[in-house]
Image (cartoon, rainbow, N blue to C red; front, top):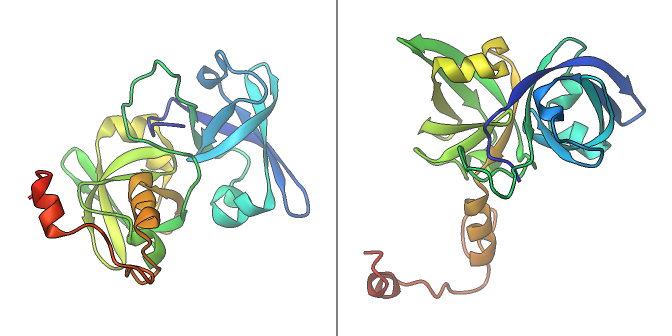
Length: 219
């Protein structure tokens, strides 16, 4: 489990590619502190296992499924990546609950400045946008951010200078692909309620009524 608070920007020092897989060689410092082989580190929001460790560098394997669902396959030698170690049991939730299992990718369609803030507009599929709500949380390349606007084609986030300094957002341009993970709570609620892909309950009536909500103080 992660929180979406990036600890460090690592640099891709090498990529070994297989037929349908890859191994990333990542230069870094902070996230190696207290880390051992087998631990998890989120790379641009994707939970990957540390397979080897050296001085100032570690490796992580990427399987076919991960390459298909994320932007990791587009990485090149010298690229910066956002890194976060799995949350310690006694750590603080500075961001929100992040699993490191992304829902898919989006594309940055626009970037513009607003005084000290920079706004990013990100286009995404309807399958992802259905879980994104205004003022809710979204993870972009492993960064926990607040949704400022959402419609049927895209959503927007506004970032402060500190976020851009500590992450690779400053390297992004219009057209860049980013990894997206929606707030997991909405997905669990949908599953437990039995909603189908079109947003309707599948073959059963919900036990949640207006009366039940009122009796429990929700109305």
